[in-house]
Length: 175
Image 1: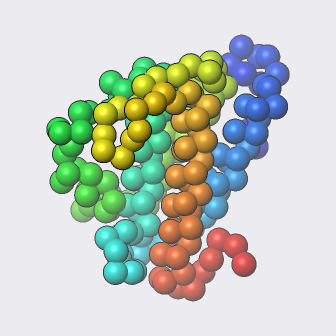
Image 2: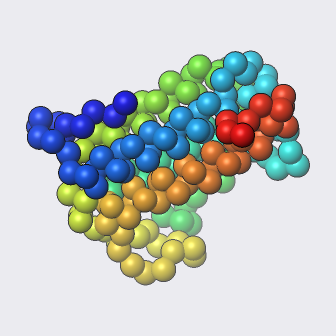
């Protein structure tokens, strides 16, 4: 259960409690899809896409960490669009040799803990210009908007993960 106190010992606002509880709910739905899987199963492509469960965990962790960094420091958290390392991006969707379910989940848990710390302490109105990229409008996002985006990404990928897991052994996180 998410603590209801800020880092300073103050009671969290209802908004922060809502953000933290929603993150926790969707994290559980997402990570439950890897329960009892072998490393080989987590690395398997079970659909025509490149997605695998272990890679999806890596992708979510890397993406979330970058967005939380953006909430704190602004667009310098993102490399310039023109300098995108597409090979590294593709590898963020795969489990590479030597990676394990336990390892990718531990890395993700560390990112989640960091996110929760920032949700508890950051000024939710702090806003930064989005990085220049073809898929962004020229606008600012507040820390609040960033956390809503992280929740949306998490929920979307939990659905993807559920499909991938069901293709492995029929198990679903819900239903």
